[in-house]
Length: 274
Image (cartoon, rainbow, N blue to C red; front, side, top):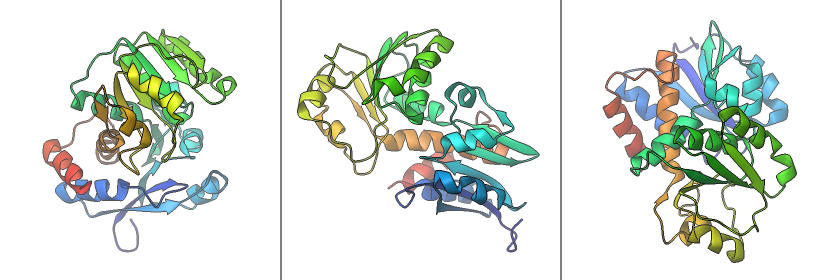
């Protein structure tokens, strides 16, 4: 415990000032009657190791975001299946050893389920970073057999094709300017504030199916604003879904272990998003 007796948690990343995770987690722990603190800290990849080794026994765990998901994966003693597949960890639970989880995959699936989308045959992923790997896994778990990845530098997305082989699905990587073919769903993992040229965004929106844009600040994103023919899901839904799973991990030691009174917890977390 900390000097004040509170169990400590934080979200780390760079940038981090925009993060809504403290609002979500604080709301959850109030409902659960836990006097835990959850704050944010700006930590870059170069500073991760020093910050992490400075944690003491008062710490229960960390949430990690860009650019630290690979760093968190590296320090974990044991990994859940999603973390193993993606090479990315957004949740570290400390205690007897260090457990690393990827709750982004479940958060993506939950976001689609909230829009009554539980099965897809094909998907398009925009971007090729750590969240893109989670998107590929999520698409596969929703039934997609074909996933197209659009990347600015396709040569740097080979790991996603390897991931597709491990999942038993076809993953093709191409540039943004390629002609768009119809897909059931699009998962955008581009940095917040990204604006695609209309000659690119228009064709993607025309046949892109349901859109989940992982970016949520600002909202609506430029891409979401161009998506007129199909349902659009805010990244806040993904954020909520992955955060509920993080709370499960911090409280129960397992992101799949449902919380006591989870409906009330989820309602409070959603309200905290405003």
